[in-house]
Length: 268
Image 1: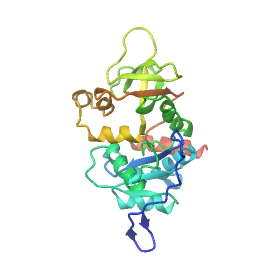
Image 2: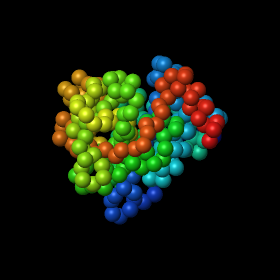
Image 3: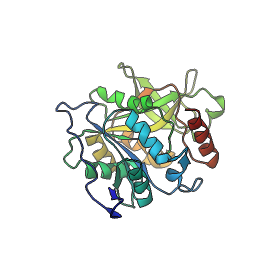
């Protein structure tokens, strides 16, 4: 944690409350990875949205989900200081991580080295308008034994996006527990035939053991071909189940996106 008084970093980030004795959905920590690497919107996590940095807006929504402790994982002191200045918790991580999953894995080990919390949720740092209910929905599939990773999707109703490779499609089958089991993720239009298409949203709830397994795996052939990290888990035989939510949260990647986010916050 960054100590604003001494301008130094402390390894002890924050004291986690005791996890429930019985593991379950409440035994969870939420970690938001953030770094200053965006090219289309420089310094994106620190972009002002009605008086607060974007990363703080995401942090607030994650706290409102009321799932468990929340922290930002970053390799940049300016992000950590901004989070600290607004009363949040920040975890400093290495600079060489290839993905957000690697970063949250390190952050979870720093914040909870004894493994008291058995679920780790990865919330992207560029979704300042994400609904707390959408965050909770990513956890719901983990109520089913044998599910390694939970995530979310929404029906893709705009015909302009059906063939857009930036809208990742989830190919799933109902699991009998109110959610869907993921069979594949792809950038092409799938599945074929009549029926709905689903847009996958990259919010993940990992069982702690599954996260440990995932980051230890090398990138898989289909992951590299589709450029979709979650395929690594499927190719390794891990089970991903998916909740359906009503609409996708707007992610902020460009100056125009940022203006839309600001306009939305002005109406709240």
